[in-house]
Length: 310
Image 1 (cartoon, helix red, strand yellow):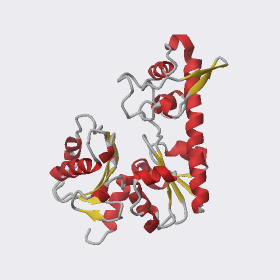
Image 2 (spheres, rainbow, N blue to C red; image 1 turned 180 degrees about the horizontal axis):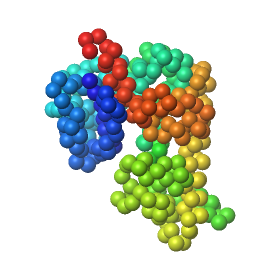
Image 3 (spheres, rainbow, N blue to C red; image 1 turned 90 degrees about the horizontal axis):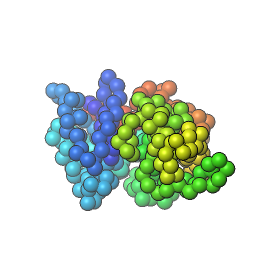
């Protein structure tokens, strides 16, 4: 049995031998089948969860669900798909939309009852109270945005002006331009939060992931070349972004924690170490290893294995 999480930008796979993350942007020529083919062995079965149905290459979520189900089924004909009703399905039903966060809660609920799960991923931050699985079933991403349990900001792919509107350069408040010149991956690399190897998503300009390339993109956010504002200016853009992003996440976590009366904070996702540092939480990498960085893929496999008939 393998676990598969099909996101809009990445495809994650959990197997007996480890957890693997593959860049797989659905809005481009999606290599879902090519990636999964390397995991197909005689008798291998697959449990799948998704969030990639929201990619804007699809005219609707149902179209995206059908595409993902068909793509996976071509490689794993007997694959089962976890839905927001906390059940496995064999067909492309509406309940499959954005169920990846729920399967993480399903897996962790019994062993960490009463805790708060914060999954700080490359694109979004899920804030999930592990109080009752029944109370979480059927929730859509729209509802979670409205309730503050889905914060659309992540470690790598968030555009800078989505979080800040200005930065102070040499004492002067300076507006940022609302273009996709730089992203959170650039800011976090410049600040030393991630390495080049951790920067797995595409860059806004399709160029390098080295420190200077990131600084050049950050300079563009204020309509400048790096030579105009220097390393100090680029770092100021990065620091302003992180201050705002950190405050956004911490405030959301605080609100959910108070509302649901949860205790310990558990951190997962590609940014689990950073999240645990700012939230005084427990990094699940200590318990799950690499599985914490791709928790839904890891969790859907575990939930499927413990389900009757597995």
